[in-house]
Image (tube, rainbow, N blue to C red; front, side):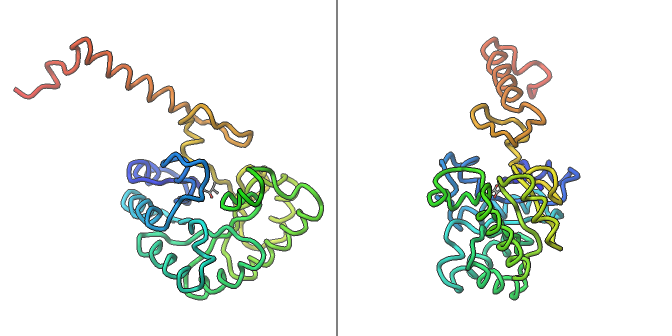
Length: 245
Ligand code: KIV
């Protein structure tokens, strides 16, 4: 799974072998420049989902429920789920804590597949005290194992495990029937997810340990734009071939 937020890159993913697209609320940071996912709202998420759907209509699209949308009562949560599904999502992803299983079960019972997200849940950054690895001590590891089981029982079809120790991700994966998707959680989960812009090397400043750059798009784009600028400055672009007569 990779993230995607726009029509342009969705068209490329549509031609790829990727199984699943996540329209993540990480768009708040990657596309809108915020320092967390907290500012993301439902209207903006819906716009991202419908752009991605137009670019990759045949891919399985999971859309993030933004900050607090599943915590404001069943009606509000279901209105948000409805908007994301009508925009083209095939499933929603919910950052889950103990107690959230009731609303998750309601969404599932309403016919909407739910992917849960546990471990480092970025919408909880203020409570977690920063972007830190979760489940390192025995009691928090046991809490995450119990939570994963509860979420499976609530009907989730998959669970994202973000930034937990590899051994814990392995144990959680082994105890579940549903697939786990890891990010920063080692190689023993059933699948992996990365932010597209991270795997493409789109920026220089954000390089956590778990991200691999499969290319260096930052330098490639910078080089191309500077080549364009130079050829315009030198009146070399447009050439004879690029002009209407
Ligand atoms: O919003 C997002 O991109 C995510 C992934 C990093 C799992 O939740």
